[in-house]
Length: 54
Image: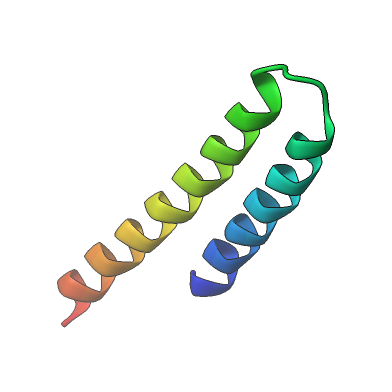
């Protein structure tokens, strides 16, 4: 699960780098927010699974 979250954060970084190169449109920044939200969701799910299994 952590590997997937790390990949999501990496995608957010890539999206942020390309968003800063684009014109001032909102959708590239929405991609960054989406990837970061995905990473947070994955880590929250991982924490819940660990608490259930412990």
